[in-house]
Length: 234
Ligand code: C5P
Image (cartoon, rainbow, N blue to C red; front, side):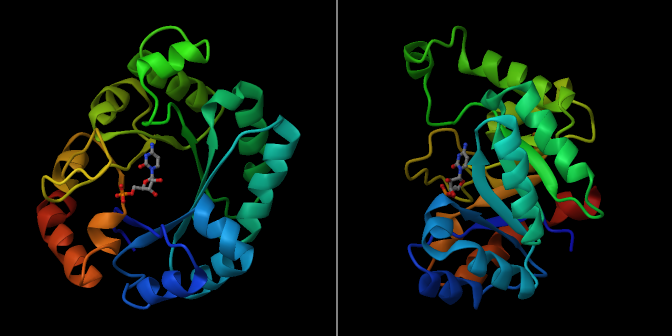
């Protein structure tokens, strides 16, 4: 499966998640399970979604002492997930511990870092004692995650171009905030699927444009059409 599309399963219950999953095809999209659904449905749902054939990005953004995060990453990998993430702000040693633990596995999942949450403004960062702009901090933390041996970062499409120019070519860039039409919802830094890929994104996290559509499969098909030439050209 070669699709860059990751559908965010931001569902309030296991039932709602399966209603959506039943309409999706594992050959045409990957899925992301985040804190809300995981806290309600737990590892059992993750394993069942993997068993259904979906590549699962477990978006739990681990941030704790190195030993705890390494153990959590190993536990997530045991669920069979394709990708998982940690907060780069947990530091070099925390990220190294996670990467080293996963490297012991035969088929390790991709491990990526969240740099600066897109919900944080420069003012928010100043309040928690972080000097400089959000963009400067994103680049600094992305470089630190690369030094730690991680596979890539989550970033907005706006940051993808600068990170593509800064990081190793193999670094995976995962971009949320994707909007096929010019509807932003509560997202501030949005891009169309094609624009995000053009900027250097490898994977597109897409929630409401697919999950809130009356026909999720048709919405997915429209996005596939938008990016078709970019995937076949690359
Ligand atoms: O519905 P929408 O397309 O905005 O969903 C985007 C998904 O990506 C949500 O699951 C959200 O939590 C996630 N996300 C984000 N911004 C980040 C990291 C993750 O929007 N920086």
